[in-house]
Length: 261
Image (cartoon, rainbow, N blue to C red; front, side, top):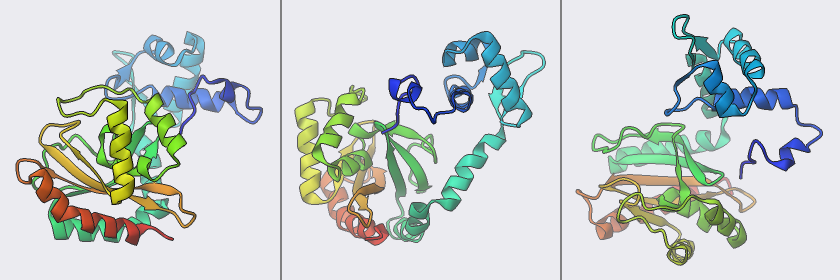
């Protein structure tokens, strides 16, 4: 799990370079809800004083990671920010191992295929092959979604030590995104336990209407969970039973093929 930027653990770490941490706080302040910001907005979002926000924003601008509109004086991320994501996907051993399996799944199922990892209480999409039937094109590589209501998230949680999975559930902002979202902790625990027994997880219209998915955990050579592989399809084209019957065995086999163990 990631450590909060203001946690005592970070502040007390003698090896932590605080200026580097603050620079990343400025970069991380930009998101879909805050694509462009003035210095005062950056300062507010990062808990920096105005002088500090100015120095870090200027440095990131000089390095090419931020751009500044001379008229509005607002900063925004540049395309250079994508470099880090590009290099991650090209250097990740998990992505490298999974790529041929994902390509095979995409061809065989003609549905959307995903590779995800857990970061904190969220799953992050690190590889994705879209189907021509895809319903939601807003989900791209780098998208973060709550783990508790996603099949890949439950698959990963099911392969973790129970106390670790419980800690993630406790830290999650559990709420109903649709009428089908499981929000009861006991029901979530039962779902994760069933996933542990079955070897695969399912989620149907818990975050997006019309979306269903089947996922399986990917284990490392040491038995620790590395991520999850999943197939997502429209509930308008597949019933729950049909989706499980069609994809579950295939997904479990794919996860085992990706696993280096």
